[in-house]
Image 1 (tube, rainbow, N blue to C red):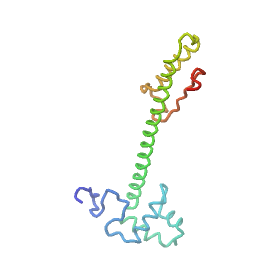
Image 2 (image 1 turned 90 degrees about the vertical axis):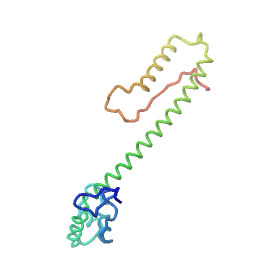
Image 3 (image 1 turned 135 degrees about the vertical axis):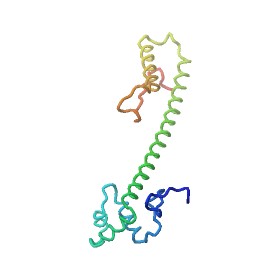
Length: 170
């Protein structure tokens, strides 16, 4: 327990996971805190009591418990904890999607390479070759150009690849 920081001025309060039941906190006080904590970002004691359909006379005891057990700080800690979990889940999903995109792109490039190896250059028109070069350069720029800062940085972008008729049946 000595590894866990103690909140200054409240030696009984453990900073880690402060939204859990605190030493000396009664069942009733902790239950009331949970109702308050789970109300959400615009929580107030009055709103939580009203939402639960509890009598208005409970407000004074809840306020006393709130002061004694630091409900505002603990609720903020809980909100931050939930936000951290959501952010980690989004980042994990983003990394998984990125790996999926790389796998699919790799397969597509393998198919293109196989088709290019079988192509007779004499069959290609000047326009087709020009389109292929432009498309290849654009894909490469979209894939590797991370030096350009823009308002969409960090957001998933959709890459569109159009195949020519020469790739039908692959």
